[in-house]
Image (cartoon, rainbow, N blue to C red; front, side, top):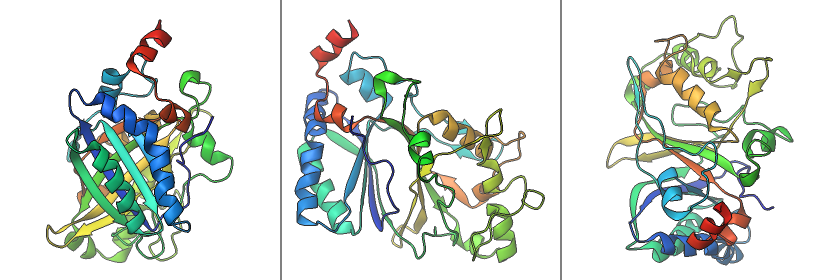
Length: 315
């Protein structure tokens, strides 16, 4: 079993594509799935030091259209959240391409080759070009991804295993595009920014629990199970920005073996925990998109089941 490369060092460049597949184009998409490994190799061979990597995710609606197999247990459409002050929308998405590399040219070339195959068969819902910003910081000025799991904890947090053995080695990924009101944020004193995040800005040190505000981003994104064990996810967020549209923000992307962990984080942020104790960062960051995908193994993609194979396997 070969897994997609969900676990990787932070990239210097990333390109995120969320697509919908036109009715009647499912077989074209199936052929691209089968060829995604070879397309990636063709670009990697030309940029051997480029650290090129692509993860492909499938949405619930496309899964039902393409396969007569049971859905992976955690695969469903993204659940929108409407809190007392902030909204997390659910937006369309059949396919996710999360492309990472040391330089944007490799990301662009891989995207170009894939989209050449899909032209006329898909619609682009969202395209975001992300970039490394100083020492892994977001445009709010804080380090992003400090608490990602490491070592053996990383695959344990990300990879599906015995809870859904038919899809072991896969994962789930949730993406959201957030835009920031940087003028309002920059007007805050650094101390107030730190209280909103729950970490120091320069040193990236988490505040002690007795000091950290209960509505801080860190406090509301810390999920602990009944025995006191913290549940982790793998974030690979990237900043993005366009001066022409005045759109600046963070592209959130989180991988987990159980999407319910990320969904609980989002409920805490948008609905509040306790109710109405919402994430202070949302006063400056607005969610524009929201989609959930299943990311299968490389083996599944290389030999993607045909419609007839799916029927036989389900029978």
